[in-house]
Image (tube, rainbow, N blue to C red; front, top):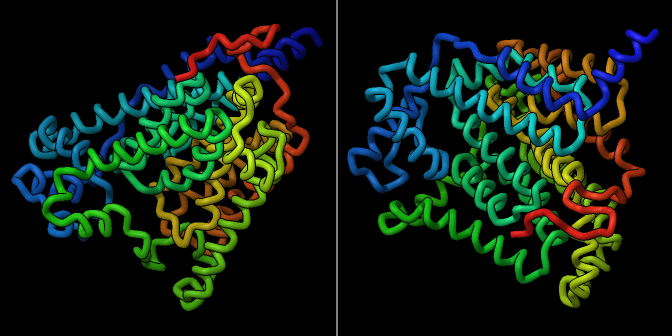
Length: 415
């Protein structure tokens, strides 16, 4: 019985994550083979050769449809890997990138006081390994910026977090899915003027990234870097394969998904994300124009605990992915490190957490996707969204942040 109690304590006590995390990171230090990044290299080559009209930059898979920071990242990799020919070096770079991001992810989990028993799930995904070390997708960098932003926000370093988030958006616009969560966090963490300054700073980052292309064709850059009208082919969809092609391509289905996305965001906003302010949505909007006193504002800010920050951002990401028109395999980069945390926040039993994770991992490793695998993909995302909503119903965000002592004095960074 004593041995059993020690094992349970090892799995559940968040303090044990301090020494468990390095062991799991060490277990991940491995390399894979076979990659596919020729299109990225072709795009980088055209940029390095002087092309500044964004609509003219193309690759083997079609026109460039990512923001400019993607181009800068892969231009550096182009030079480091001899024009993309040194594939082993590229894989080595991505393996170190993977390990570095994993360290940040585990640090975020520890800040949110997640139990050690979910940490092994952070390193077990075969599909995630493929995304980083086989395919070398730009999603790898985007998800790194996402968790860097979460980590900074958890430490109340709002400026650094906002810059990191904006660089992530500048790499791939998929991170716009977290935009509503980032906005509501900043509006509660900071006075309105400082929150608007953070938003302006994020816009400045985007403008700076885009500047080399703006003088030549500004509308062309916006239309390609943030192409909201882009449609994916039915044959590549991972999530809606169980639907017939006609329905999948219909406008009615697209509008229904947009409505569902907005509906979920509104549900979370009204019932979960405004809890630190202790106001209804109308009251919160009213308070923006009639700011609270500095003392009240500080009290609201301090209720944004590391767990609240991480839950809010990851919930927004998963809501967006659940309601996405089409998901490709690389989108699992945003899911793999979100699922363990959200399932834990849902209040599921550890066995159920591992079971759902295993089902989701299986579904994302089925290639090409099938009706069964796509139903599991959507089902697991739906379970996470409703699960984290239900699991946080009694979360009043009353607990003190690690940056607050018994007297309520803040010792954290508020930048």
